[in-house]
Image 1 (cartoon, one colour):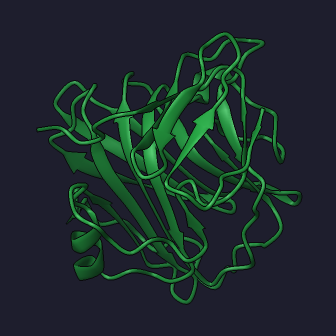
Image 2 (cartoon, helix red, strand yellow):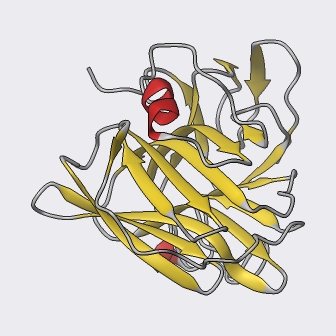
Length: 236
């Protein structure tokens, strides 16, 4: 199912087996049910990314399961894990947010995370020195070592939301699938500062939109049972 968004603020989504939904693009969220051996709910963006020396990826997520699930995946024909983000939630209300760039990865520990709650997550990476930071609700999580200094993210790959790719647009595994809800994906071609991220973390205020990708402002393909709804995407 391909969805190309009009320029107005509301539109209709037709989901197989369900009545059409009239939803606001700014409040549209997506539910990702469990994956199986023959069904991998995901969004595949038709817009790719250019080559990048810096990047910031922010999303609002609500995890349903504790195991690691990858909610943002960018794969290039020469490297499947060119840039990916995942989270695992621990029993002590901590979460490990994993960031991969090309062949390397880091894991940052964040506190106060529970299943079934909304969180604003941002990952910032700069290729000049490999510096990287993970933010949860505007607060920086534990510091990490430099990640792939001197690398440049390769352009022309495939962006998938909700699955980790072992090849561009495919090679999915249910053990790495995201289960939960997601909204407000924003991607910039620069490393945002902590002050900038603090300003965009609250969900009840207008904030700048990503200059590379901005939620529901680009065409995408929804496959294998993702569910759309329009409602609150923040906890009280």
